[in-house]
Length: 383
Ligand code: ACO
Image (cartoon, rainbow, N blue to C red; front, side):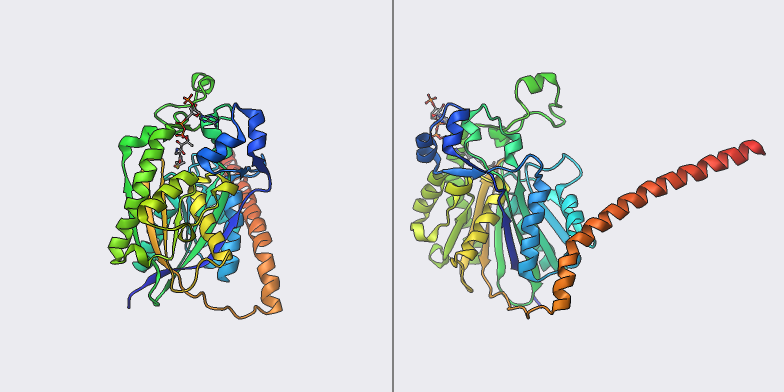
C-alpha cells in the first residue's frame, strides 16, 4: 500500500525582544524609510543572550508535538535545518533530541541556507514514504543575530531570529507532501556566506579584525537570483505533480524581502490574497521563515483541507527548493484523560532529569574505570 507523509503538527517560537527599524537607526547609518521601502521589514525578533538556536527549536518542536498529540518518545527522526547552529558540532538536532527526551530518535542538522526547511521536508518525506520512519520532527531554527555584523547596514537590518517546526507522520491516506523540487548551484557560494571559522579560513586574530566571522552578502546578486528562481521552482514542483498554477490556493515563499515576494507573485500571476507574507514583523529568519509562515497561515485559517500549498525558498549555497502540499484534515484527537495530562506535563521535566542523570552516570563511570585501572596497576606493582 502506498505511504504518504502528512503534516500532523506545527509550532513556532519567536523570541520576546522586538528590534524596530527606529532602534536600528541608532545603531547604523540607515532609516526606517529605507528599510521599509527596500525590504518591507518593520521589525524583527532578537534572541536573548542566553537563548540558543536549539532552545528556540525545542520551543517550536514542543508546540508541534502538542498539536500532533504525539509523545516525543515516538519520534524516530529529528532534522534541524539551520545555518546558525549552537556549535559547528555536535548537531543542534542532538541538543533538541536530548531536551525533548526523544530518546528513540536519530538526529542531524541540515545546512541549505534559507532553503533548509524545504530540503529537510523532502528528506523526511522520502524516508517516511520508503518505510524507514513513521514520525519525524522537521525544524527550521535560527539565531542569525549572533552572526550579523551590527556595523554593516547592508545585512544587519535584514535578518531576525525564530523557529518553526512540523511533525510529519506516515499515513495511507493520499495527500500531505505530494512533491518536492530542489536545486543547488555552488558556483554562487560566495554570494552569501560567513567567510571565516571553517576549514577554508579558520578563525584567527586577522579574520576577527576583518570581521570575517559575520554574514557577508552580495545583496543585488542574491536579489536577482531570488526573483528568477522562486517562479521557476514553483512551476517545477507543480509540473512534477501534474498540477497547474491555478490549482494552488496558497503560495508560502521564503520571507526575505517583500519586493522579492511581490515580484515572484507577479511573474506567477498570483494576487496578494494567494501569497502569504509576514516579513514585515519578523524580517528574514532564514531556514525558520517558511515553517513560521506555514504555522501562521494555519492559525489564521488560510489553509483548508484539500488545499494545495506551495512552500518555496532560496538561499545560501546557492540553493533553492519548493514543496507541494495537499493539506489534510488533521483527525480530531480524543480529549486526554487527567492521568494522561499529568503524564504529559511531566515529559519535559523528566527529559531534563534523564539528561542530567546520564551525564552524572558518564562521570561516575569514568571515575570508576580510572579507579579500577589504578588498582590493577598497584596490584601489578605489589606482585
Ligand atoms: N540603509 C540605508 N542605505 C542602505 C542600506 C541600509 N540598511 N543598505 C544598503 N544601503 C545603500 C547602499 O549602500 C546603496 O548605496 P549607494 O547607491 O550609494 O551605493 C543603496 O542603499 C542601494 O543599495 P542596493 O544594494 O542597490 O539596494 P537594493 O535595492 O538592492 O536593496 C537589499 C538591498 C535589500 C539587500 C536587496 O538587494 C535584497 O533584498 N537582496 C536579497 C537579499 C536576501 O534575500 N538575502 C537572503 C538570502 S537567504 C539566506 O540563505 C540567508
